[in-house]
Length: 67
Image 1 (cartoon, one colour):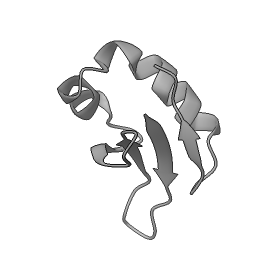
Image 2: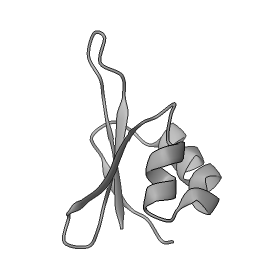
Image 3: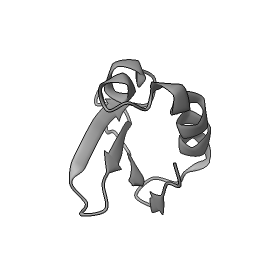
Image 4: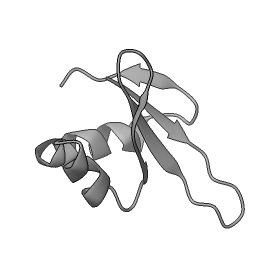
């Protein structure tokens, strides 16, 4: 699984994308509202880990998640 942080502009907030090994979009959520999206794909218990990673992740950089 891969994670990517996308920089928002003007009134559009920052978003996070979670993608699978084939780079198919699994989840797309605002940095400040990840709960429902992570719950839908079964990663609610990993929310704290993912948000800590996102906090230090530079915009536009793709990182492989080991979950």
